[in-house]
Amino acid sequence: SCTCLVLTSCSEGDQRRRMTRFLPENFQHNFVLVDALKAIAEAKGVTPAALCVAWVASLGPKVIPLPGSA
Image (cartoon, rainbow, N blue to C red; front, side, top):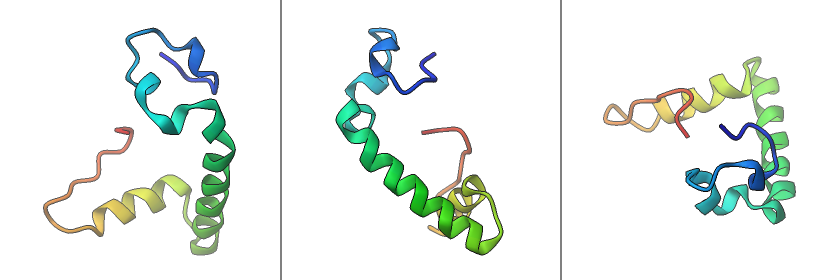
């Protein structure tokens, strides 16, 4: 399993190799978004994960949040 930021350490069959958000040139942009998400969560007194689950849950009854499924 690839748990680090270096995409090249993922196995050849790892699907993240085909997702542009995991490319090295996108890491800095991703961290800007993460920082913004953390700030919103902190202002609401919740964790970033809880904020994300709540956002997915707010999309309607036909959408089910599955924490840990990216």
